[in-house]
Length: 554
Image (tube, rainbow, N blue to C red; front, side, top):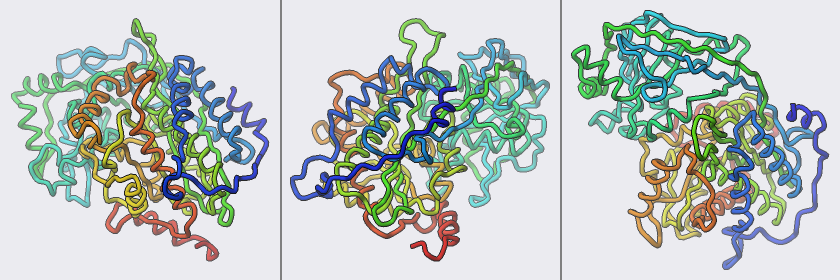
């Protein structure tokens, strides 16, 4: 395929001379012009989000367009190919498409796929079915020894179907010390819930969708989990995955429970109490999917600027280039253009690279990583961290740009995972130069820290930073900023309406790109290795990786 051909040919290495002028922007002299070229950045957003790129879905013509565009931009800027002689890191994947005859029954109710439920398997098999599987309500489906919590206590789940609440026990409880209160932990993510159900030996796992704790509506569930599903594949064909995975609507769960004399709201309250035990419902589930299977290959795109004095230390910028492609199941607009998510962050990579190339060559190497398959479960970053091109122990920081919001400049900077790492000191200093302050995200219960590619780097120990425009619009206030966020989540997120439109106000997004450049520029020209803050769940992994570095390492 095209990716293999490009990998085989490679791209000639290049290293153009850097200009002698000092870097512009936040770290330059007072009154220095912005480091980021706003018009150029917006042009990249418009191009990547155009219909010609067909929604940038891996495995499609839109992918080919995107990979060619990114390589051309990196080459134009004089970035070195990051993977030997190539800008591409091949990422193998499998595409599994459930047939239209997928079926799911709970008790006596046959559910309509789409309106009532979505169902799939990540097992690489032509057909997967489950029959006569006892349904067990397992609360939030969490096993967390550090919190003294086990939603599967006392039950053997082999052959059974787990019915699971979304988010954390802290979401539905009144105890702010329960997990992180309403701030989501990784235990609240849908990815974790399917993983834990598989560890418990369940035959199927169904998550009950509710808009508020999920942070997106049912349309987003249907758009994201219908049609071809992409995944990494293990040598055993993903046999470790649970046979059937899916979501059901709140109304489906409510009716099922009511038929057994149970109330969903009462069960949610019980599931948020310590000592909760799983409840067998006395009904069975049956489900089946027949699959079309295609193996393929996508690619991460990697460019770099070698460091002048410490080229073996790396500051890594990232943003995912992929989106949802297009659907043939609808009339009218069929393309998920993904302007905000994530043409904005991808354009940010290009323009931050351009800003570094205009300035003095940094002491450390700068890596620009455009990731694939984020929308399919953060697969491109998972593959990179499992197969790193540059040592993770020598990666100073991972700086992620994903879905930069439209709107005016803000007085604050919203940090996901606020308080997690020493990188926030660098961010606070740069933000102060913009007249801004750091705040925690307004909706920590939505778990944005666990929903983008930096999370895989965090799990590997690399200090990671993810922030967005704040909650206080300078010109129109907090209510306007909240309205903008709510409008995007309800009307545009993972929908065809996430399009580029001429005249959009991108000043807030550009403010954040400039800020991200400034943080990386500071890190690239000093000797320290920032760490996670004491008590953070990722610090031990980072400490272990740094402890085994050669004696010559800093």
